[in-house]
Length: 122
Image 1 (cartoon, helix red, strand yellow):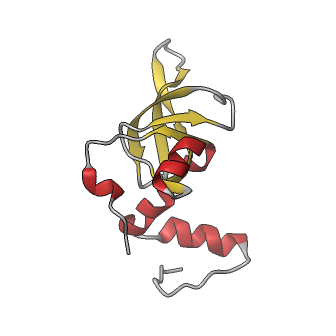
Image 2 (cartoon, rainbow, N blue to C red; image 1 turned 135 degrees about the vertical axis):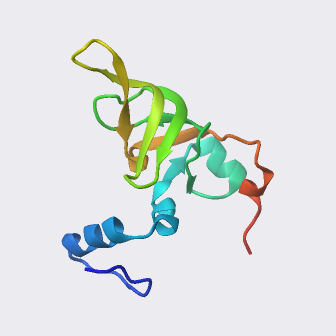
């Protein structure tokens, strides 16, 4: 199935997954949004924002729940975040960062060097 920008949605999970899987990278970037903490939600007047490298997040689901850390890497192709402190041990004894989906984290602190990130879109 080829990707279409005019897709209006479907109740079929297979079509939803296909849409997300086949989407171009500039659209997949929008799937990397995570909810903001209550303080940030009040300050920025929005519920979610796209996660970036440098944001501080807390994992809400899975084996790493309640772990906090800074986002080290964002994989747009796979829609995954790599967070400091969220790592698994490999068979050779070394550590590797564990991929987390952005829907399973909450943003506690935003990386604020980019002032354009907070401009109000009218």
